[in-house]
Picture 1 (cartoon, rainbow, N blue to C red):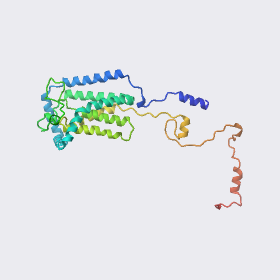
Picture 2: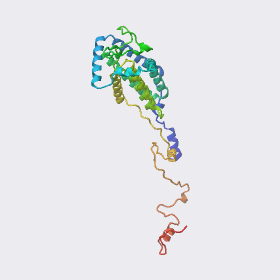
Picture 3: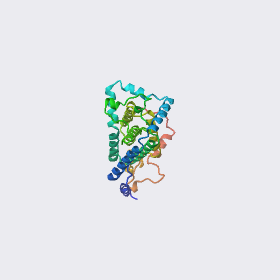
Length: 312
């Protein structure tokens, strides 16, 4: 096939899309799906409410397990933070206002700017939340602020803003759904998703979000260390089975590949200079020596030739 024909054929071929350039799923369907999942989760938490006796018994087990694992006391973390009223107020506000809006903004940004990665994120957060809901039903847990043995205060009530009132079996907010901490799980997912889906050298700074979140949930006495560790374990299992999409490099046309020193699949290649013969009458015969080669060979091998470097 002529060279120009090959180029036109390659240009006409559909190039594979990168994950961030994939087609967005229908917006209305996504809104309905995410909304249904969220309300199912809230309903599940509501069903799990009221298991007070089991919640306090599980709190005893979690506290003893953490001490057996030599984890630092949550009360010690709270005491450190309470040395600065400005810090504890910042942490209270972060816990109360950042968690859900940040996750929603993350999903919107992924949908708009990285639709291929958005589909992966949507499934990961679905399974992570489903795993959390199962544990809310099976393992009700009294948080540290409601567990007298820990001797911690609800910093939201003391310094504001308050998130919860007194525990009530008929309340829509299940205060005993502490295991696992989806505050921690979702924040880690936000950081991991942005690190995987972007290429900025500053993208690792997103890890500050889960670090601040972990400090907030522990210092405010809303969660134990184990709540966050279990959430991370569930997230790790989900990501293991739902791998993120790979970035597919766009194909390079043969002409551009030759100029850039890369092959058509994007891998680097050695640049080999070639000469294209346009006149058949000037093309040398196969095996013919270059003109003047015999004379140069005779000068180099003649009897009077000395193999010494020439001056100049």
